[in-house]
Image (cartoon, rainbow, N blue to C red):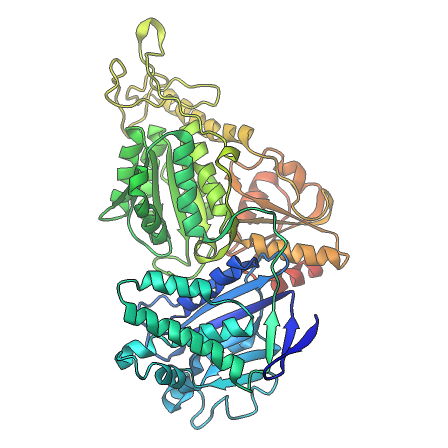
Length: 623
């Protein structure tokens, strides 16, 4: 850190390697938009970052209540960032409820920017502070730097002559906060101004109001004596190239489009909107001119069945869902297993069971993905580990589905689906082609057709209906080996069950081997992770290694089948720790398959792991 002064009010400047900012307020305060604009600016200026949008499930929870608090957390820095941060350096609290919810995770000595209009008697009562008490007026915040700012009043003053109604004026108050934060962290508001002009191009009076308020926030910080410190977080040293800020859902959508380009297949998405997967449908719907077809079905069953039909006629077919939607798709998932057609099922996991915690994250659908179908119906299962990794794994899901003629379940979750990070644009030339083999002539003896005759991967041929000479039947009934005729023969059924299972296991021949991403190839403790726990485990492992602990980190992206060397890797360590946002689902799979006494660490709170939680467990196991 270094400090220097600047005019006109002798502001102190503190240079910091990273910072965590939490925007928190009522659902109607625009905290998600404010956070995203701050994030986009940080990314544009070269910071590495990670975000955590955290909002209530209710479409409109009661205003001013703890249940209605909406938060957006961004961790940005000049170093590599893998998590949104355990604790905040700066907390923006638009009302008393927001302060009450988020104060426990503000660092001691941290900065609070409190909108005092949100701390009147009504708001304090709604936040359930004792009658007559206010945290802004007693000594409970003495350990922090508190800036009391009447954001609402300043916004009204700024727009008094705008001609806008009071409701529209109050909607601009988040821009005042954003301008103030831009000033505090010395970030240009230019990209946000460009965003506002584009978003409100048809409502210039609204655009002018937001830009004016944004500038007023900046000026308030620059000219008010209560703000005497600014912070500078320099750009991170990332590999050269073109970056953009991307969320997991957007990365999934782009990964699917890339796979369509590399396979030469038209992309079809059949889906029913459900939180938090809906953004994938929204994003893909923008690409009509790129031969992307999107179909908003009347329910989940129709969504997957339309995708099965699209796959049957030669499309790269996808269906997306979350939580209870996955349950509704299970029968059709079994049908696609029996048909042996390429189908990608994206499950953006959320807190469950039933409608559960729709806007909160969880990793509790792993066993459902593995076994959640009637009969013996194995499918490939893979998982993305970060927002940008959603691109790679969506592409990988399509590759496996098409080249191995099988349904593939891609697991992401609400944490990485809504979270964002800088993403280095991949080059088209770096993406391998996806091999498509449509059958164009009979493949049996004497010109006969064998629709279930298999190649070396045990994949059957993809036959587009209507191809002359290749007429065949399909359906959910058991198939006779090779001919595909309906068969109830007991021995044939057992044979086909075994073949379908072996086909999935043969996918492992094409997968990268498991290896330690941090730490040594053998040692005292391995932390084995999957999915969105990646960032927290990687950060915890790195910090523990730097402190002298013998710990390594392996992260699984392929869960069925596992990498071929996984057993060898697991048995290279004295202990194996498996942290999961469930009650130990990967733990069960690892213990059952490899018979090792792996140790679980569960968190089922609708929240991701913190680095601190993982470090404490690692240190406990190594003592």
